[in-house]
Image 1 (cartoon, rainbow, N blue to C red):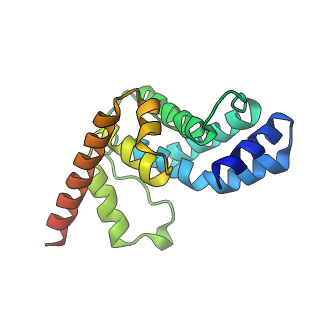
Image 2 (spheres, rainbow, N blue to C red):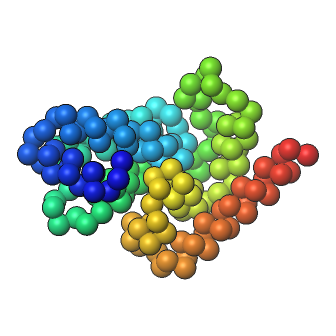
Length: 172
């Protein structure tokens, strides 16, 4: 969904249009879930966070002054994920292997990737998920995470190197 279409649909949601909300939900539920899952590492918790994001979006959509509603939605997903981590009182979120979302589609690459994600810091996981899964620009991630653009870019590059190194070692 293009940003212009998202803005139009959000303005319709503000007016109570449930069909517009359904369009937003169908387009963004998977990337929101993926971002939450990458941060919290727990399928049921990520599902709850995804539900919370969309309930909040429906009940209180972003004001028209918000220039980038996509970034606003993913910032909410990130913040709810961080809150969930704080509630569990554990930042070492990958101590237990997360349950597969769909056992029939679980393949070795997914397991390897989840194992590789364990090697990243929480902020690196957030940056990678927001960039790759939410399709946000580094400048948008910088605003969401309150980090400098160069810090976001450096952490992203470091995370990719960590993932690449881990996956190459695992395949040997």
